[in-house]
Image (cartoon, helix red, strand yellow):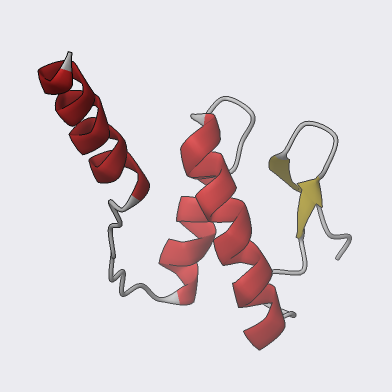
Amino acid sequence: MLRNYILSYSILYSLVYLKSVFLIIANFREWRHIIELRGSINSQWEIRNVVIAILKELKKHAPTVFSDFIINENNNSISKIKLVE
């Protein structure tokens, strides 16, 4: 009984306090490619949520570069609109 409690506590502790930090260096073209691939409805939902947060941050710093990407709150995905030339 005590052994099961300690085991479950250690698993819970590792799940709650586990944190990963990533450093990604990319230019605007690479970011646009990442957002287009990983923000679509066909990508995994966890990765899609991270890419949506990245797009929100990038739109603050370079709104004209990423203005053609629209975040769909209904299905939690990113779509690209075609700009008229």
